[in-house]
Image (cartoon, rainbow, N blue to C red):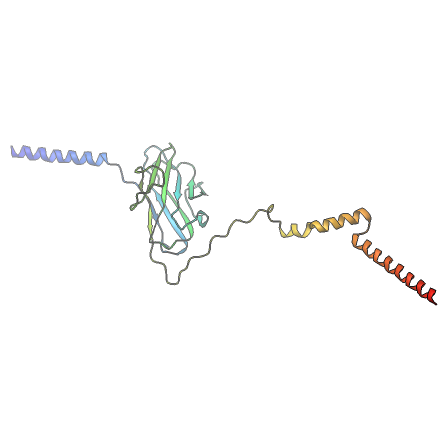
Length: 240
């Protein structure tokens, strides 16, 4: 009797273990790594791996919300899946393209102009598949903030831990702003060839009368002087 009980116990444990392993899916996640993971590091290359959770569709897009201290203009695309394109957004960037093979992970890298002076950086990530499914890697350990994409509906965001800044390291200046359009600020060439309003009026006067206003004023002054000289001479002759 005891043997039968032991066999049933072993069989039940084996069945429970089998059910447990088949019921729990593989724990996929998004990772970020960097050999330059140090506060205030310049031109730091960050490598991301977004693991696939779908057995029926491939990944088509990765959207990232940048952490505080990194502006979209300070991020450049490194490398990624063939044919995928990098696009900056208001709060981060997207990397997208043709769907990867089903089950294939999306791996790409970016270069950050300078990492902020922080202990760790969280890169909230939305991972989209060809069938429209979206994996939300947006939860933060401390606050549970989900970036407005639905409270409690996300997975942990990838976090990059940073070493303390190197001695003497300082923040670099802000990224160069976009150049002002030519319509707002004329170029040097346009400034040298386009006449000022005063010059345009002078040219118009010369075309209308053949002589500029300055020349006519000079002629009038000469005539007045000549008349005055004649009058002075006549008065002198009359006195004699």
